[in-house]
Image 1 (cartoon, rainbow, N blue to C red):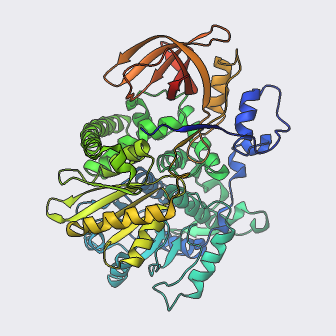
Image 2 (cartoon, rainbow, N blue to C red):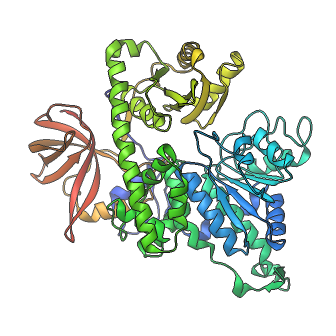
Image 3 (cartoon, rainbow, N blue to C red):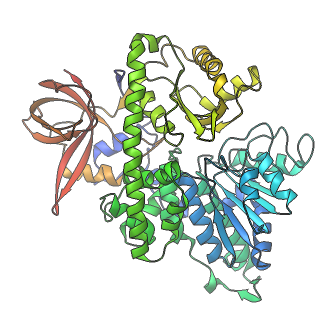
Length: 608
C-alpha cells in the first residue's frame, strides 16, 4: 500500500453554543467538518428538506395517484446493489401503505439483462404492467424507456446518477442530479418541462440523495397530495382512493421505512450531508429501538452486530455487503425478499443464505485480489508508477466482483483503477469493467471524455465521480487501457497522486476513555463526506500477536502517562509492528459479555 502523508484537519470556524457535557474533542471534530453550532448536529426529522423543491415530483405524484386510484398494475424496477434493493423495498412497502394494491417488482440479472431498465428487462415483463417505476436507475435508460412506451407502459424514473447526453422519454423523471438538459425524448432538443425540472433541481439544497432517498422523497410527496388536510391552509380538503375518503387518521406512517433508507444511503457511499445524516440517524434510531423491519434485524444479527448500539459503519461493513453479494454472484431478489419479509423466521433463513453468498464473495474476492496483486508485482511497483490510470484484466475473473478488486487496488496504489472481466460465459468477446477513483479524478467524466475523443470504443458507461462501470469489446481493451492512462496523466498531477490521510490530531493524555468513545460513536452518523474521527498518537508496542492470517491484536502503551490500551489492525501487510510507532486510529468500544472497554481500531501505523 502506498505510504500516505499524514495531515491534520483544521477547524473551519469557532465552535459556539455547545453544552458543557459535549466533550471538547467532539467539538473539535465537528468544527473540522464545518459543524460549529449544536443545531448543525441536531439530526431530527423536522429538519428534513421539504420534497416539494425537487424537480419532476409534480408529474410523478400525479401519475402515481392516478395509478393508485385506478388500481393499476405497478412494477418497481430496481437495481442489483444495496441501494437498489432497499429502494425497491421502500417503493413496494410505501406504495402499499399509500393504497396501491397491485405492486410487484423486478430486478435485472446483470448477466442477462444488463444494467438498469434495459429493453431486455422490459421484454421480460409478462404480462406487461400499466406503470413502471424505476429506483436507483433509469436516467440513462433511453432505449429501455422507449421499449416500455412502445408496449403502452407508462414510466416514472427515479434515480440519482448523473445523466448522459439525452434524457429518456419518461412520463416523469425525478433525479436531483439532472441540472441541465441538452436533449430529451419528448422534443428537440429538449422539452420545456424537462428544462423546468432541471432548473428546480439547481435550487434543491441536497443533491447527495441516494436512489432510496429519492424514492422516499417521492412517497412523501404522494402522501402530502393524498392528505391535504395535513396542510394548515387546506384543512377542508379531502382526497379519495378506491371510493374511500381519506382522513388525517388514515395517514400512513412513512417513517417505518427509514431503516431501509438509512441502510441504502450508507451502503451506496453517497456523501452524508446534513439532510442524509437526518435520514440515516432516524433509521438507526428505529433499528436501535427494535422497530426495524425483520429483514434488517436478521441481517444485523447475521453480521454479529448489536441492535441496541448499531451505527452507520455496521450498516456499511456488515449489512450492506450481505445484500450486495446477492447481486454480485446470484440474484438480488433474495435480498429484496429478505427486506420485504414480515415473518422473522423467513427473514432469518434468507439472511443466512445471504451470509453464505457473502462468504463465497469474500473468498472469490480474495483470490482475485491476490491475482491482481501478482500482476502488479510482475511488472514492479515502479512500472505501475509509470501508469497513472491503471487497468487490469483477467479472463477468469467474475464480472460481479471486479469493482471490489478495483477498490482494493485503488487503495494500495492511490491511482484510479479499472478492473475488467468477461461480461458472461456466452459473451467472452465483451468485457465489463468497474472503476474506482481517487479525489480529484472524476472517473465518469473521464469515461465521457474518452468516449468523445474515441467514439465507439466504449459501448456503454455510467456512474459517479468516484465509481463507474463500462462495457467494451475484448479486442479494444489495449486501446482503452492506453486512453485511460493518457487521460489520467492529463488530469492528475503529482500532488493528487500522493496519498493523504487526514486525522483529527493527537488525543491528549487521559482522554482515551469510554465516555469520549461513546460520544464519538453517538456523534455521527459518520461516513462518506462526514468522515469517522481519526486520531494519531505515539505509542510503545508492548505486546502483539497474529489473529487469523492477516490481522494483529496489540497492546499499546501511551508514553505520556503509561496508559495501556487494547488495539486491533486488520489486513496487515507488514511482518511485525515497530516497538515505537505512530498510529492512526479510531477510538471504539469493544463489547464482550456485557462489558464495554476502550479499543483502538488502527487504520495506519508507521515507525516513530
